[in-house]
Each structure stands twice: as structure tokens, then as C-alpha cells.
Image 1 (cartoon, rainbow over the protein chains, first blue to last red):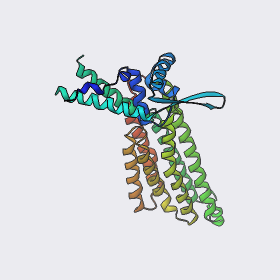
Image 2: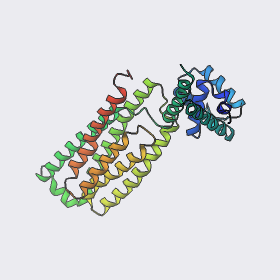
Image 3: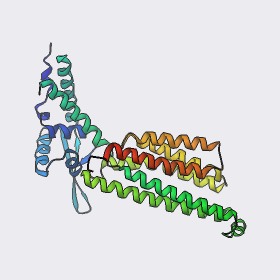
Image 4: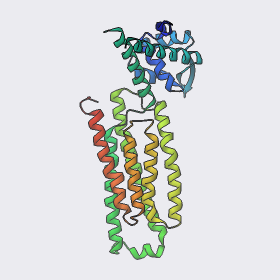
Length: 99
Length: 213
């Protein structure tokens, strides 16, 4: 039998990264400030995790402007969607495995 | 915490985040109460106005001479002022709440919610406008309630899900009103006034009381 833990992705171990991915799964794009408000984290903390996710190719960043203020938005990539779905599936399998 | 609990926790986190981020959750119960109060005051004002037209204190003959246009213009003015006041107050309380909860008010979810409400409302507005052009005043109140109800049912996917029930009640009132033409103002007051206030109090009790926000 396949090892159920194999699907678990280290990238999503962290609560903030898990939150970011969950939010991006159901929203086409979302701004840095909205993410900050929803996850209740500090700028620096969130930025670090976003960079990690971006480097893994799970999310893409779009830097735009609203007037003169910069407005950075984030969206999930195809790779990110697949990896996150696999992660949820693995979580489910593990819980089922315990029963 | 066992490993199983940890995974369950993670799944619950995912679910909560998906919900919170795709719905506009700052909508305050006070917004409902304020909008309902506006509607009730406006209904009372309109009732008095109609009463005094009937007694001819307000130069009703003049209105008759002018034909329906003047009556229509006055009613539309009252409705517009009420709508604007209700909207401003509803926005104010929701804005105050979002400042307390720290959730940005003008996010992706708010934009989606606006579009979902605006589509049935604008379509309804045009239908009602044409009804008045054809002198079908009796249908105005039920049509208002029906289109507003549809807008709420539609909006419930993008905000607090309980708003769906407010929508169903508005729809039901509007449909009953279709067979009780002439009592529009009462239905209007019940739907836009009483139902909003009741809904607002229930929502405040469920989401805001005791959370200090």
C-alpha cells in the first residue's frame, strides 16, 4: 500500500502558508493587505512566507498600482493548486487511516 | 495533541480561511437595524403624506390636475432619499465594524458582493421604472420586495449566509402583496422596515454581542 504521508507537503506545514494557500484556492487574486487582515499576522512575517511560496512556484505575484500606491496581489499557480489539493487529500487519507 | 488532532486542526483552518476570505463578513447587524429604521420612518412619512392628500390639505386638486406625474415624482423622491439614507447608515456601521475586526472593507469579497447585489437591483429598478410609466403603481411595492429578495438570496453566497433567509422572507412578502394590491405601503414597511430590524438584531446577537467588536 502507498504510504499516505507521501502526499504531505512540507511547504504547507506552517499555519500561515497553509492559510495563504487556502485563501488563494477560493479567490482569483487577493492583495497583501487583505491577506494580512485575514491571517492576522505582521507584514514581515507574511512577506517571508509569501516569498517562500513564490519560490516554490505555488503562487504568482502581480505588482500594480492604485493611484500612486503600490498594490501587490497574489494568485495561485497551477502547480500550487495541484500541490495543495494533494496535501489536503493526504491529510484526509491520514485521518481515515487512524479510524 | 495527537497527530490526528493536528491534521483535523489543519483541515478546520483551511475551511475557515476559505470561508472567511470568500465571504464579506464585516456586515454589521446595526446596518440592518439602521436601514430598517429609515424605511419605517419613510413609510410613516409617506402614509401621512397620502393621508393629507386625501384630505386635500396638501392641494390634492393640484396633484390631480398635474396628473400622475407629480405623484410619481414625489414618491420617487421619497424612495430615493430613503434608499440613500439607509445605504449611508448601513455602510457606516459596517465600516465601523470592519475597523474593529481589522478586515479590510474594500476587498475582493466586497467587490464580488456588490456586483451580485447590483445586478438584480438594477434590473428591478428598470422594471419598476417602466411599471410606473404605465401607471401600474400597485405593482411597485411587491416588485421592490421581490427584486430585493432575489438580490439578497443571490448575495448570500458572498456574505453571511443567514442573509438568504432575509431574502426568502422579502420574496414571500412581495409575492403575497401581488394579491393584495393597494396595501403596498404596509408590505413595504414590513419588508424593508420590520424584517431588516429583526434581522439586524439577530445578526448582532449571533456575531457581535460579547465579541467586543
